[in-house]
Image (cartoon, rainbow, N blue to C red; front, side, top):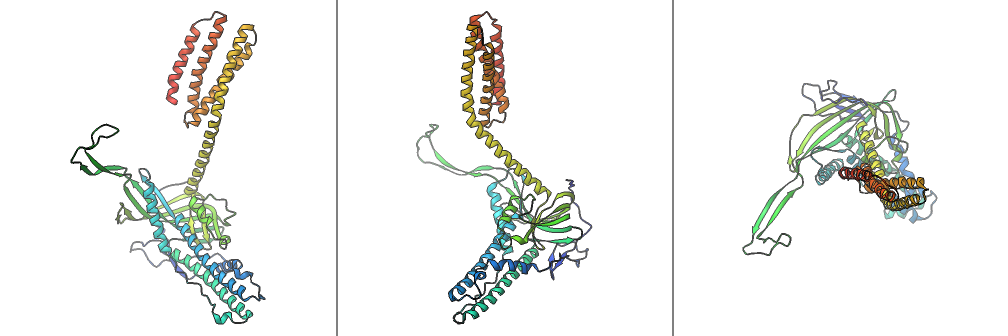
Length: 501
């Protein structure tokens, strides 16, 4: 990936408005007055055999309870109940759209930590407030479903009831899809969703918006809130034995600072661009986008697609909107424009020409690092659990093999045979000792478990050799320098090994 970060003013000024489907959408913020303000770009539409609204309507229709009613149905109650259930299903589809919009707004929220450690409570509170602000802007007044049932209609012949209810429900489905796309257009108009333009030779250009919250934490503090002294002697403190003469209230501030709000517009220029369904997409998705994909309704699933290709330019415009010092403080600032050469993966989630959210190579790399970290943590936790199970077993094995080695050495000195078996048992005891020490350190989450095991093995191994020296000394003359040297090595190894425990 090639990335060059710089802040600049782009002389290649884009259009201020985009026209699609007879409707104009704002594309950027207002520019200085000396620049022309009548630039309108007509968005190239991808040719489609049939309008997307009709295709979605055909996807909704078989899922309605009305679809199961046969034209020759003779039960009046069954026909009426199927119609009512179908209206309720359309209301449920509206709620699913609202949930989809909510998760799309959540995916377009970005949090950054500028200074200090993240104050989780403050972060959650400001993101929840920002999400509620976006949902208020995205609120759509759906027209209520029109129920044509009345006593006069229900008293009519069954074929008449079926014909009128079928026509009414067909109209309601068409009205639902119409309002759905009006909602998407409204979200583009309010700069919550973006648009994608498809160009020849598998190229495309699309934009989306991010609402960024940057936290600065100046750290914790505490102060005396109030003090009260007693007029008479009180009891003694049980812990210190001192006499209690008053009470004091301490106000503890766990964190304080600022929340800077920015509004960011991302423009992606892409080559080798293709559209693929959610189930066939292989791109890495951040957690918020994964949650967005999970709430895509079944009737809309086949029409939500993921753009995949190679991004060669990413233009980001960020504008400071306000700063909250845990009280609203309005600060005006100039836009920050970042336009950088970039190569990498380029995913985005779209419905037709509408872009719900997008992300770039940095987000892909961050999510890949996060997944690798989660996998490493899981592997480390598995190692700790396995070490906890093995440590007592290897400790017991070390004691048993040590006793066997001493016994074999005693037998070899008496019978003058089997010395090789005693040596093998001694080496095995030292090996199991190292494994027991390493597993114990791993179970205690010691980051230097291997070093600690090395020094502990040297220390206890020297003690084992000293014990064997005494057994051999009983049967033959040996120099006392050997145990002295071994104990000296054990002492040095113990002193150094303590630094790694």
